[in-house]
Picture 1: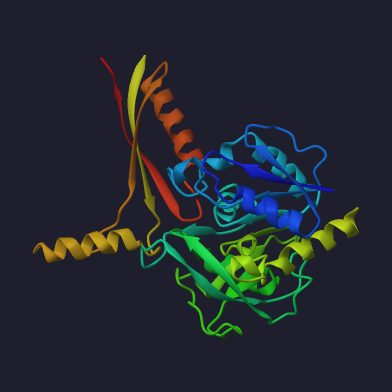
Picture 2: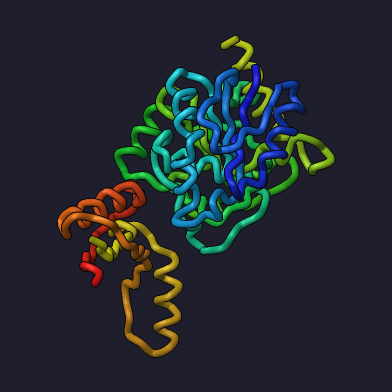
Length: 231
Length: 83
């Protein structure tokens, strides 16, 4: 059970992702984006960063990397595929997830803690309770989730919205609320099948008290549990 | 034959364009009565093709590959034969 952490030129949360996966006892390996195969891997994680310098649009050029066909193959076979921040942007650009991430409505690159409500328990959130509010940091300039009305309705009706920004405080106090202007306060979604997840906040940055929090640990523990079920 | 093509990529109407808003604010500060400013992208390229029609169809395909249909529209603005 190995998780591939995809490295694009300009990824910068790749090692953090490996560290977080290993922290919960998963095996993780960095995979350079020119690799065309992900044989031997049971899941893939597209990390945060600035793939291809975010040229054209954030995540837009990453979708043409050879490894993306292999990522698509994993997703089609029902394996977990995760995109965090720039990885989420790349998954929407590759149309593995619906919608798009646009420039934050205040135009600021925003780096702060947010209150993140777990909307429901999925393969990626089984270690949390529905309605639980987590403190997780964001760090992005293009995180405003956008989709047309019909797609938004499908996401709502299908229970595909996994994380929302909320005004609720955590035990650490109040945090920023929807700082990018995302529609319906969307911070993270899954595809209709439920095996591809994208989220703008960074759970890999809160997996140890030394890093200022552990609210992200449950995310990786959930993935571990999901992979054990598959295997 | 070589052709020069210009591809324009813009945000769809109705999608908030904070860059356009920022530019609009500056323009108004300079005294221009400018409204509804939108910021897009222009891609210029040289294409090898047998005819202007073929060059245009290549540029259309490139536009389709590069623009994100969720929030953008594209147009091939001009195709000119290079001397």
